[in-house]
Length: 342
Image: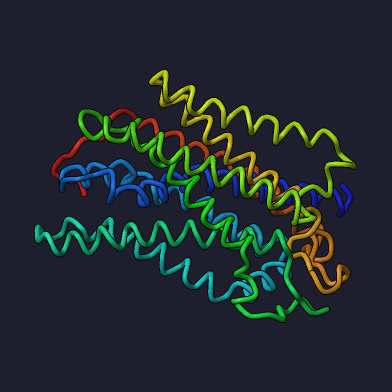
């Protein structure tokens, strides 16, 4: 197997891990975004938190695995990306920590002020995480000013452009919709009826951002369509994405939330795929000099390292998938509150 093929295989594996994380932890973040607005009482907010309580930490395994694979297989890219996005990643880390701590600490006391404080941190951590992920995607789509050695030459404010902010807000809207649909699946009664309206509301907000981001990226971001001429088959992805988006309101109106959830998951997968297709073969595009770009080829580990990594993936991925399937099957159905609930 040639070194080039190994690099492409690992690029595909990274995308599979990123798609898995975006879909699974995406609804976790979405639940956190909508929970202070959709849930009115303390019991309802406990139900919302318990809908993801057994799942959220397992979902984040996909992100940890993505980071580990990037570090092992493309160490130069890992070093440059993490140094360029150092402050945003630190903020992201704190946001994820506060979200997790909020789940664990909220029910330790019955005080209204105590629970409201952790509710706010749960919302803030979830929203900030989604926003930062989106801003990072937008910044990478536009490229960064990097040196020949891969060092970022700009500042944090240079990454915060109108496009990257727009993609950040778009990500918040997308995950809010995804989380609303998931919550509708897991709840019942008055809360579920209220969430029906939230599914519609978040869908319309997401659709508006989708149209604006699509137009902006198509017209002003060269990377978004650079491979479509050479590989016309790529047009199938945005076409399927549009069909998935169109099926969401159809499924909601027919009271088939599971199909709406599958459609929103397909939408997320398509968007991650299009993002990766826009970057390929770059992992960190350079705006000042294309020759300085960090690609999957010039940032790769040795072929031996990549081959050993494939063996680890062949052993580890079935275990991760088995655990994921088992945990979702075990906690299927409507969420209920018990003695050990959050």
